Image (cartoon, rainbow, N blue to C red):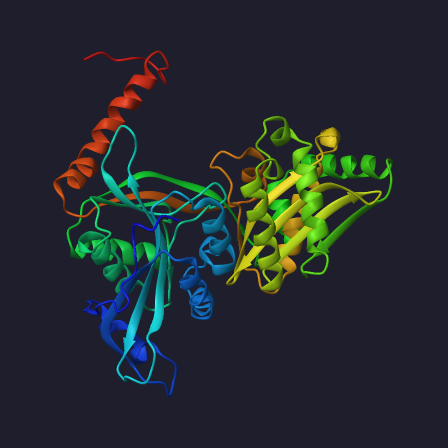
Length: 420
């Protein structure tokens, strides 16, 4: 990470709005209440972040909306692997205690990258940091403190040392309490904002009966076809489903996953994880960290003890994130990936700690969209900090997008063309 941004040793607390809604001052029974003072630290030193892992983990466990990609065992390896040469800091938002002998309570966390919006739009932006393996950039916000933290975070990115013309959330949850808090803070400040994109991605509701769930999605003909393919697989040898959550066997499974992925189309395109040293190191560290924290769910379909489909899920809060999947393309006619996905639905529905699973998939992913009924709304949000350049981008982007779409539509009309 760049050393351009340094943290204040003693960040100055500020008074914040919305503090009066936090029940009992925001702490547990019998603990000193929180004051209305809040501090924002911008930390770029990894050792300083590692020293805060305990309170960071507590924040992640008590976040109003889980985000596995910003938990310490996921974000720290990402910063080490992909943060070099970038101007990145991690914003920590803490609520002061009303007593001097009680430490502040960490209530919010978000990694921030300061950069230009694009080559064509060289306007400074403070963006919730993302990378190739990050599929959600919703900040970690303690339950009940959402608006307070966002108010302080926006204030720092608007007028602090990391001030820019724009604030960007590349992949922000577009439903629930955090979206409500974002909209409330923006409305209060009359801040200009624009959704660059908004879409729904596949989500699995794992609180019901898995057989009923599958039956509601797939026709009897499709289910019969899957059973026929499964029988044809058994003609080739012994089929077993294996499921691992502990750290004892995770290293062997991870290596099997990397080998299986490399043998497929990603390997041919030179985009497999194992073909990039930084990605391979990151993936191994994340798997080890997830196993250590009890957040790892590895499942696989094996033919004669050889993997033909493997899936890595990561647990967070009351949900899970479908992180990566790979299958043996030489057996594609038997649909090993779909076979494993059906098993994944069963395991998720029977898992006591999983209420939902985020697919982390592209919006038009044909296989997962067919098998998972629900959708999670995500948005790319741009917020102007009040500078003229930020206001101009937010104000002109809709018109520019309309022009681009009009050009793309030329020669591809939906129906009868009309002329002005």
